[in-house]
Length: 353
Image (cartoon, rainbow, N blue to C red; front, top):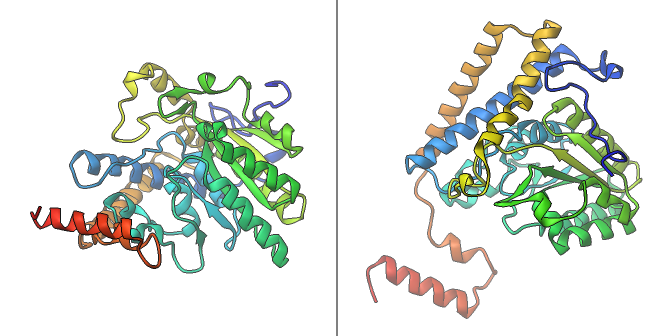
């Protein structure tokens, strides 16, 4: 199956353009734009980890190593498309929204789930794979309306072990829903390595059961991610149905800041994976092409640092989250069970028994 689903690549780990058919398509402007976005996201990610360690942010899921997969796929979308993210897809959300709007999620604020006006981004899905059938449903609705909108839904390798994965793909296949199933295969579902949860050699091959295209790409090659996602979205818009994309990547750090990856993974392996790093790969490519030099790269890093510091300042001037939000946004009229929980918790906060 690995031969039938080879990993598609445009630029290799050394920054070499290995697919010459893209020679005139991959431009200086595109390369620099992609690089800026990935540096901004990594700067934000590292800042968030520091904030959490300092007690200034809640539990946070790092994304370092997966920037190309998220940035490249999000940039392939049209402005009115639909996005269904997981808890680790804040990079994709912020790129698609053209705004770092969702950082306050990790402070318990509901505003972090509200995208800028006109952006069809659903709240992050913490339950595993539940967003796949929902994305299929909205894609079917778009098709029924005669819209050219497509949907993209993100999920990890662990989600392919859930029934929702199969239900979503099956329904999308039957009704030719305009949806792209974008899997980021980072090798682990929390602490469980992929070889412990499936016998399939690839995730892309799971598309065979539903008679839809399955594509396997180098998830650290932003050009491969962007162009293959673009193709899948166009296919969806043209009424040809869904595509399953497996972006092979790696998360360097913990599953979340509440996790200790050394308990289940040899972290020396994680450091070795940095030779495939999406940012240094693009940097090498740009230098070879004469698209960037050290001064330009330093300036991009400094611009990102300044921007992220401003974002954090705005975040930390927000008032504390309203405790009522935990209870008041579940049903239009709270059930007696929720009301009882709310009353009990408010009494606890007041120091009452």
